[in-house]
Length: 292
Length: 250
Image (cartoon, rainbow over all chains, first blue to last red; front, side, top):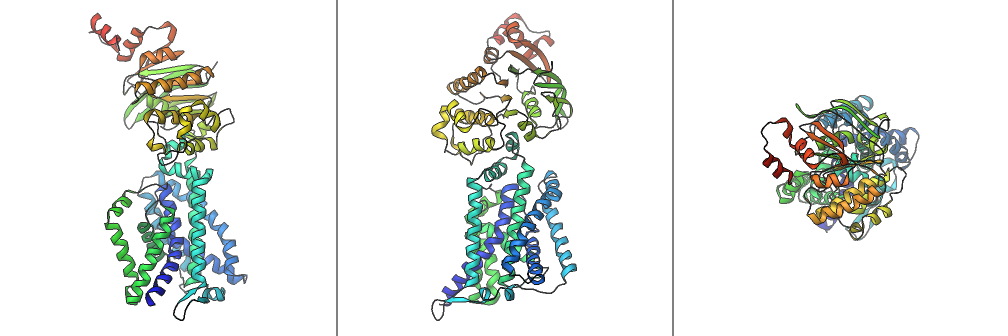
């Protein structure tokens, strides 16, 4: 029973990781940028929701609805001001830029909010603590189901946008061949800016759910970045649903590892990640495929 | 009167190499201009610079009087200039229809809709759902031209549309080009096949090592004259009548 519980918990944890991985995957797929500030942007989102929820005594979910448009704007401006210029300077510059951004964000948050650890779990009431009892030994937490459902909805929405809307087609075309896309009238920088906006908004969404699921503080970003990155690699670059599968595999690896010994949980995740990277599939990933 | 495209003293470089040296010419509305020259003459670079895919080092490019030299490529497309790039360059993981739709999304108003384009290129109709990467060379060329047309351009730049295609496929491509010609679309065609260029175009411009060495109405120039300019024979004092004759056989 312990194992089944672990797997169920792993699936739900995977939903959270998929939420994190989604934005990272999008930015890499569309514009070949590995956003090293992704985890920290998620923490910004978490703090945003926390501030709005505590100051105006709103449910974190309502606060999230208010914070998301602001994060969309933040992502858009981030690209227009910083990332667009970095892209012009070659493939390594965006890496440096986002790394610097990560440091700036962490320290700014530290300055504004102090190192105190926060959580939104207490503000969401029964959602974060309640669960369905399936049997005397198996329970399914409300919150886990919520995160998984949100992840599936988000990924489904992204898949729909990419496959069936004009904007999505432009993103895919720009991802595959930005120069030719410009030659048929698609403004690459505008496409990139909007993709960044979506990526940052999904990061904020993931950050908010992390805050509900557990705790966060100004330095929580890098850990989440690593998990997101591992989920993307395990699931395969360029595949939307691969992101979900990658997240779930990572989550299950961690929870099964935890069942063996709590110390092993994160290590188990790393080992699965390394195993995937060493496989033939890993070599494919290293060459980087566009979002199809 | 200025042409629809007016190029003045255009210089374009690949690093330190000047690929386009002080090129000036004009294309009038409704005209078919053939741009010929050997490999490396600078034809593709010239077209790409006009379209905005390659930066101009100096000189000006005017589209219907407006200076577009520094405008990004997508803005030139919005002003009515479309390039069918060398090598087709379809988006490989997208279907033919999606390739067309991407171009049509921000298109200028005009007669070229998805249905109009598929009717004009019937070869594409059964292929519309297929991934662009699996199309044959001729089919890809048709799709690339169709895609450029979806933007409803005022002037279409065709870069080596017969490159790498079987003769049958080339015939098919030029069939559609003839349809465009009948339609009074302004065309600039880069073509290595002199015979074809002379038969299709109103005017011919020959380039050699980045410069324009011949510019003429196709009616008043012979193949031999173009061939001479093509190979720069008039610059060298060695050609015998025999050599000229066999080269002219091309």
